Length: 63
Image (cartoon, rainbow, N blue to C red):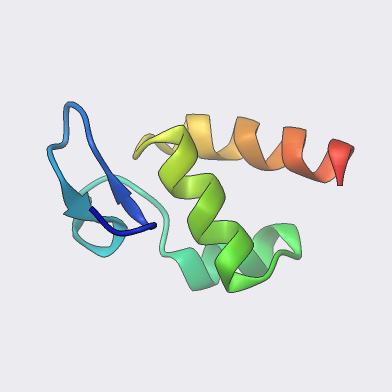
């Protein structure tokens, strides 16, 4: 498993292959994150967009 894959209900797939998640580049721009930060948050919070948005808000507050 690589750094930007998710293991769980979606199986082990790179985030680019998840059906209901953000495009990492678009999402990084939305929150002012680097691409690496965006991919880390997306893979840490799973495919759902809501979870990713919550994760970004928490990351930005702490960062």
